[in-house]
Image (cartoon, rainbow, N blue to C red):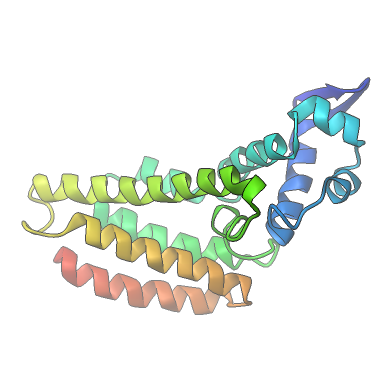
Length: 203
């Protein structure tokens, strides 16, 4: 793993990002103090600021780390599936498995870590909102492409389907935070898929 030098001390970047990720994931952006971060990461505040510039800089690095690991299932699904219907089914079930995994705080870091923030942290909430909305846009584009190609029914409202799926997936994240199990969320995923597959003309 790559190391980062801060105030004369070299530390493992992946290791400290993993530790910081779990702190932000549990407590949210505003609920996480620099002192808590440095204690859990095992580094001093000068090293944190030297490596990341600020708490916000660390958090944005954590978001990238999360998306390459715990939250990486979504990008993998988009990368690996060409047909929108297969993508949607995988997305629902893999979200259920990821969000209620017993080794994580529950839910999605990007969905839950900045629901409510102070005015000084609004830019963090805005950045996460952009990421969430970008996923809805990607879903709409993939569904729309299959409609244009004649794979999905003509006249299907790609935006409406994408918004529905976004609401389901974000709702699954919140339920996982409240203790819903993988089995429970997979049931939700199945019910959502049963509804969507009718719109997609899947049998």
